[in-house]
Length: 511
Image 1 (tube, rainbow, N blue to C red):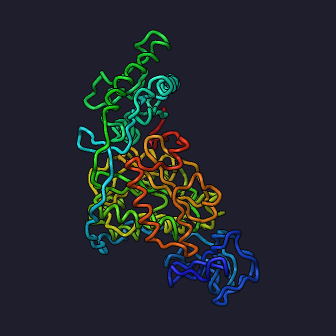
Image 2: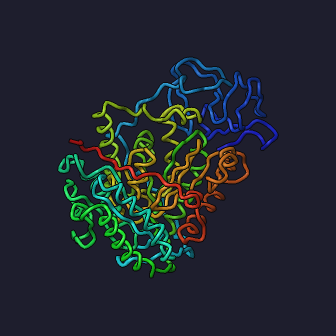
Image 3: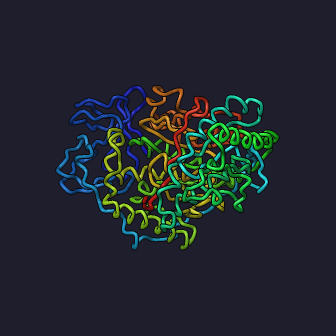
């Protein structure tokens, strides 16, 4: 990556790869027509921050190259120094999945990174948690109102007695009744709820609230179907009794959770999720590469790292399958891409629905450019495994956990895979958070950090202006991850108590 110009003195642009024939404008507020860069490039028109400028004359249908890859074709001839907005970029075809190379460029494993630990809560099954939370699972949406009322009372009346317990969280969702429970794809939402019920941040204390007539039986959500962990509302006489039963069962579990203490844990106990939302053209050159560097450090230290978002990987998958550690992993990655292609086709949708209007305002022309920036979060480690939506991670290293690109659905599915905390990059800004796990927010631009200083945890925008390197921000993230996992530092989302609702991915029919 090259930056043309000096901070606060001259106009700046970033050219990522020597093959690129476009660059993005760094300066806040963009640059005016007639601006001349030190290299001699003159802007033919106003170009907004983050948007592309042509570095050469382009003819109609000529390839437009960014990240050293073709992101599209010129709709018409474009003069050097012109603004290339999304209307001038024709979307190319996606990589053909049956023609991808597999495991032919597997990166060498870097030496183990030793001497780093965190303070977590050891669970009976050998796993570790980073929070001490009572999670109360629901088997059907009908009970959410009663449970929310009970949880509100628990937090006000009961929780203050148990100083070592961080929170009580209701795992509400919109599943369990009026659904095709035996449809093949129903396995996705069901295993998602099952996995969240035993999340490592819950300390092994299981509690499920059901109604009594739902299709998703509460017994399916507890290990071994133990009914001692279930409250069925239809078995109780009136609202007051329902609430009191929930409170009493919750307090039994709070007493046990309160006895837990943090202990030294190896980094290999951590499962860290990676996600981006409100992305812009800086995402792929600042925040995501820095997160990728931190991901490599985590993998070196033995952790499990999840990267996701199928639609924001699909157009760059040809850069990932060569990194699969073996043919089985590469084939599994292709399998998830094919499944999602078919899913979109059934819904009469295609990949052009991504990016969002905000992404385009931030300089992203299409899903190809977005994908190339998105996969930078995966760093450079070998891809050691692939998870279908909602599957639990069972081994270490860099794993592709297949999810939709939706922030809320991706976050829910990564929680089901066992994620302890999430690193979330954003260029446009979002107050997104999760109740079950801390979310570390990373900005792509200095101006977003200045605007949202009490929502952004790490500013990677310094990379674009030459104030910091990818490596420096990557190490900062790595240390912050361990501090947050240990409870030594809070994210802003934790500080403000911000969290979004769980959002299940349900591709099965609703009857």
